[in-house]
Length: 85
Image (cartoon, rainbow, N blue to C red; front, side):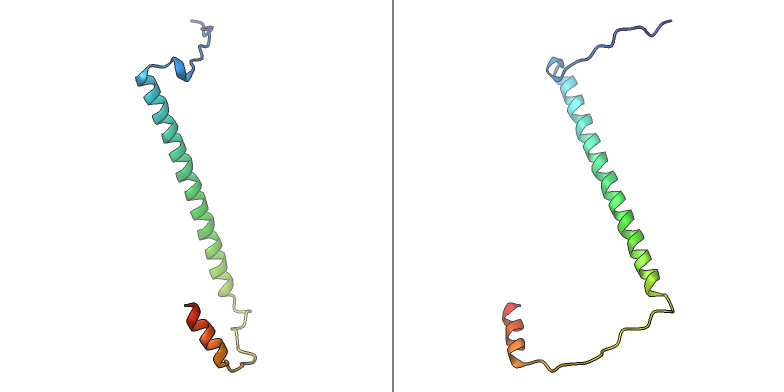
């Protein structure tokens, strides 16, 4: 039993309608799987980064933020922000 069969490469145009539909379905499935995989990788990296940021904020050596100096708002600033909204 030898595996010396010649490798036959079939092109898309040589396929019948069923072969073309299977080929296209496989392509869509592969693209969808790649998209889901990339999305899962991105979500896991965001979750890991968020956890690191959260744990960094729990560090007892870091002081809470405090206001150093406050300035009164002018009425011009209030009218500019209300018209933009």
